[in-house]
Amino acid sequence: MASINVRNGKLVIDFRYQNMRCREQTLMDDTLSNRRTIQKVLCKIEAEITLGTFNYANYFPKSSMVEKFHDLSDQEPINTCDKTPKFNQFAPEWYDEMQVGWRHSHKITVLRLLNGRITDWFGEMEVSLITKADVLKFRASLAKVERNDGKTLSAEYINKYMKILRMVISEAADRFDFTSPFRGVKPLKKPKTHIEPFTMTEVNLILATVRTDFKAYYSIRFFTGMRTAEIDGLKWKYVDFDRRQILIRETIVLGRVETTKTDGSQREIDMSQPVFEALQQQWQATGNKHDYVFANKAGKPLEYNNVSRRIWHPLLRFLNLPRRKAYQTRHTAATLWLAAGENPEWIARQLGHSTTEMLFRVYSRYVPNLTRKDGSAFERLLAANLTAGKEISE
Image 1 (cartoon, rainbow, N blue to C red):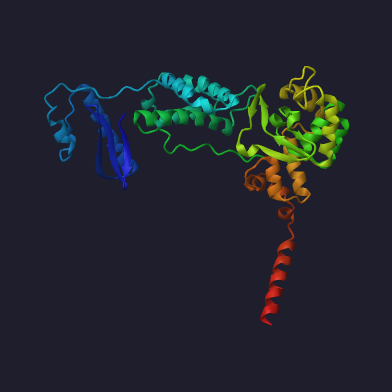
Image 2 (cartoon, rainbow, N blue to C red; image 1 turned 135 degrees about the vertical axis):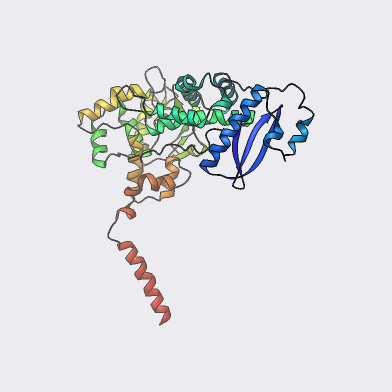
C-alpha cells in the first residue's frame, strides 16, 4: 500500500512497483495542502500500476530507479500491489503468537474485545488497507454504543478496544511493511477517578453489623488494602504468624489461580493487631480444613460476585450507606495509613505500588501535610533556616 512519509521536513512518496519498494523524496514541505496534492499523485500512480500503464520515468525522470526499471519497460507490467491477509485471518494468528506470555484472565479479555466489535468492523478488510479514517470511525462508533443501563461506553473501555486494535495492526505493519494508520491517534482522555473511602466511623459500623462469618474477611480488607483477587486467593501457606506478615504471591481470577498482575504486586503486608487477631479467628474456622483462608463449605475460594450480591451490597443498604464497590476498602486502608502519618514509601509497598507517585496522585487530599492550608509547616521551615542564617552572619 502506498503511503506518504516525512524526511527532514519534506514529503516522501513510498510505494511498491515490480515487486520492489520505491521511495522518492520530494521538495514539498509537510503541510496539509501538499499532502493532499501528493495523495492525488499516489492514487494516479497506483491506478496506472493496476492498469499496467505506469511509466516510472514519467513521474521521477531523475530518479536512480528509472534505470533499474528500464530493462523491464517492454515487458508486460505486473500488478505489484502485494495482497495482505484480511483482518479476520491475521488477528487469530497474532493472538496465537502473543497469548503465550499472558495471564488467563487477560487472554479472555483480549478474545472478548477482539472477537466482538473489532472483528465485526474490520474482519473483511485487508490489514494494509485499513486507514486512519477507518480507525477513527470505529472509535466514534464505540462512543455511540449503549450499555444495558442506558449509559454509553466509558473512555477507559473504548481505549481498551483501541489498544487491542493498535497491537494487531502495528504487528501487521511491521510484518508486511506498511505504515500503521494509528500514527497520531492518541487514547481518549479519561476523567479523573474519584475515590470514595470509608470513614473510621463507617468502618466500625460495618464491622459491628456484618455477619459473624465475614467479620474477619472485611477486617482484613479494610486494614490491609488487599485487592479482591488477592484476598479471595489467599492461602494459609502465605500467612506468616511468626513474622506477622501476609505474603501476596497468587491471586484468584475467574476461578483460576494466577500469579500477580505485576512483579510489584508480589509483596509482604505487615499485620496490624486487628489483622493479626482476625486471622487467628479465621484459623479456627478454616485453618485446619482448607487451603484457602476464606473458603466456602466445599473448600473453594469465595466468588466475588456472589459475595457482593449476598453480603456486601445488602449490608450497605441496611446501614443506609452509599452504594460502593468493595474495592473501596483498599482506598480506605490507604487513607487511614496516611491519616495516621505512616511513611508514604511504606504505604506504597503495602499496596503493591513500585513508587509513591500513584499514592500522591490518587490520595493527595488525604495526605495530612497537603491538606493543612494554613502554611504553618512552611513558615516553621523558613523561620528555622532564616534564623540559622542570621546567627551565622552575626
